Image (cartoon, rainbow, N blue to C red; front, side, top):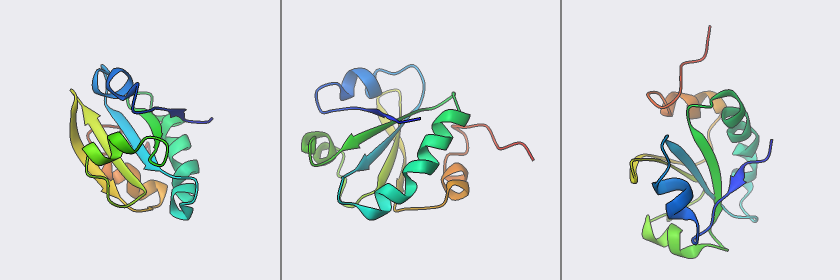
Length: 110
């Protein structure tokens, strides 16, 4: 399942005004670690409907990345109620990302 892309133009509508938490993957085509975590993020999106997962290409949409101080990628920001409530920087395994998202996603069933 490919993740939905957001842009500078629709970021407010798609992310800041969302009724549920939104995980934004700030990424770029040339970023190897970004490509590494993409399958994990797609799996999280498929398994956890309680959080929306979207991608924002920082090369094509530099305004939003600059506004939120994204200095290195991949950066994952969780937005809730129009605010950044969690920031995860760097490539991590799916299990580590899920641990970081505790409180936003249900714990995996053992």
